[in-house]
Length: 86
Image (cartoon, rainbow, N blue to C red; front, side):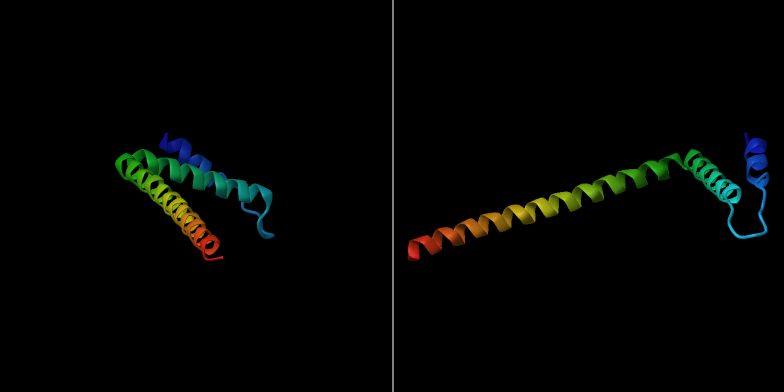
């Protein structure tokens, strides 16, 4: 597997005039292979990072929902007080 990865990483043709499509594909391929190799080597770290991202996203969604619910509750209470005053 490592020979195949090395061949794919070094077989990218480098174009002399800026980023060409072939060079960009090679860079993306090398990046994807590096990411997959790192995920394979660090399974626990990858799993914990994924879990942290999921928990963080859930916390943000819950906090926004709680804030919106609290705001709606306070607005309805204030509207009820305003009707009683008139």
